[in-house]
Length: 159
Image (cartoon, rainbow, N blue to C red; front, top):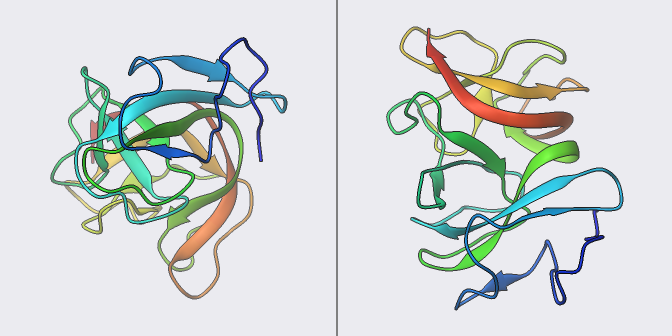
């Protein structure tokens, strides 16, 4: 888990706030090279490792094929958040878990799915690519989290 290294007193990347503790859009860097962006949940964030899209107002919703417009920033949630709560989304660095479908391969292009917050490597037509996010270890036989690396991820082209 990453810890903040800048003068953002009280920044805890795993904490969820009912009122904003920082300005949305604030970026912090952790001791492990991770980058985190502070945002507001525009809808419920299911749990740790779920993938969200952050709009221009830094409102985060679960990434899916139907609600991930091209060019929006992607972040990975460290835990569950209720709608209108605030928290940090990892937008760079080594990530211990990224939510993906069963049998998702490592080191391949990932894309959105119909399941909110969950990526895959299936290349389904109409899905959006998740540029800048890759698994370093394949996922097993059930949907779940697998380790990976993220570097300024954004919603890419429609497949």
